[in-house]
Image (cartoon, rainbow, N blue to C red; front, side, top):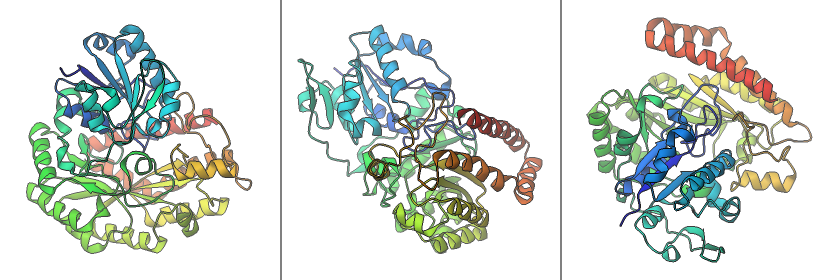
Length: 475
């Protein structure tokens, strides 16, 4: 008999955006929530399951307490920033119903299964790496000793690590996640500063060919082999979204880099064009004009692009596999075609200096994305960057990436560039990018021509300046 299973994104600090897995597990400059797709995927495999995303729905533990007595299994998605809070949630769950089996998934437990289990006896098991069918095996009642990909306590209290589970190669074996969204989530609670609202996001594949030293998910769960669903399988889910979520203004394909496979993304775009949907995706800043044009002609609205730095040596240092001049041409091509770009930048990466920060700011102004996100270099455990930082003594603090209210801290410090200076540079970067006459004029123009956009940008403006204030308090 299948265990009555609850998939839980636990209560956390206000504005915690954990659903993105590796991207923005912190308070953002503008409040955003990504769909908890990594929880929805195993939930879709298990009959009678339920998904609760507490942060996006403003739920406290008291709001979900009643669920505990209706379930046999709870699976919590955790991460390095949220782990302490998630352990506390697990302990509250176990105290409420001692018969519960509680497991954790996510990059944190993938790279430190032993330490995660030792953190609390309320955690019965962790599912390492790619965990969809691991969780299904547990829910189906298989003996834990026979399940690949888990670490658990046996009856004697000894921690056992079973062999790794093979990664999924036939991605069409995974059921659609969007019916779980429809059943358990309120789509209007999910929004991003650069996406149309309301939106829906899901994956068409897993893994990323790039080797960026800081990027968490490919190094811990997804891998560097880009495994994809068939185009027909993706299109069927898009058709479901169009029927189930008629209010959706945009579909975001959340693959780490949808443009890793150019022939496939061109073929997918053509099929999306036949449906008349508006869509966006993650991309590397090296997509050729010809591919961009096919994408744009078939409904592409926006690309989320990790520029990271405008300094070529830093791009080499982080193994980005990108040349600055290629990114410049890409930005020009996007402008020529009318493709909107949301650009992300990271300050404090290996090789950063006061001069390279200014160089990246100048580069950002030149390529001029419609919107930007500026982050501090985050050395997540399990990444090459974390290993580098440990070996070179770059850690400025022992704290876990964020302070207690969710504001990102500067963990890396260099002899020539202290952490406090890197932290302050984020605010400087935002102000000098956005508080330019041309940028202000563009934002005002958007607001004047669209009443909904006016309300949204005013709200985001309040959130942005509150974000800057909270950073000052955290410094």
